[in-house]
Image (cartoon, rainbow, N blue to C red; front, side):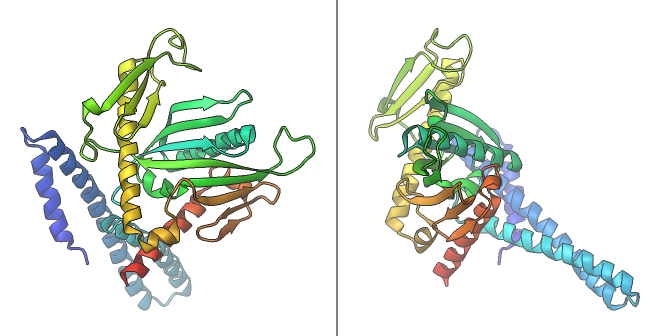
Length: 352
């Protein structure tokens, strides 16, 4: 059981400390991150406490109420509060005991076409649109960092930054191979084709997470291509950064400024290196919950989108929904919540 008095004391102490001058930048960033987490925990705890007090008061009033109509109204209010208490209790539990310390972070989302040629690229674009629409429902902001399109449309690859609260928590299980079964627009015989798209989800890294030696970097500039205005093909504004020890390569050409593109590419590089560390750690742990919910490995087939049957199936948890049309319009939350529930169950079974 969490000691909220101690957590509130820690919050007050951190609040006073981050206002002090002369603190090391990394130490300040670490304290501010912890402060933000504590603020969410305490706000949710206060809301939950108030809801529980209101529910108890209503239950007491009902015992002394003789009017059947008023008792029915009280029952409705109690039911509403019970739902709120259940939801906030789960949310508070997730904050106090997160399955992943990076759950609250923004992410870099990479989508690449796999087997299937042009059809795979078209589906890569469909998936990106699906995630963009879902992001709108969550009040997240989506920015394309880099992309390569095919001649007939669709993405060979697209890298986007999705900024918001709990983005990694809700999208982390999207990593893996997504398989689509449908009749391509270019198919004249009406035959169903199978294509694949690979998705990677990386939590945004902070300076305190990853330290990069400048001597380990090779930085190249080149002329941007594609949409972007007058700077395209006229100035060397695009930036490509290679991390020599790991051979990780990132590039950004979205901004007109080379300086801005370099800064954004560095953030992307930090996130890729952080994800590599996370993956290595998960493999070393071989935790049961990772096996039950999915490792997030890019080679793992996680989901099938069957257009003729209007069906989407998540193979890790055996979930099948007969509403692919709605899912592709961004209604992904039912799948997301089912995966989070599976993760919670896996953690509990591992602890018991």
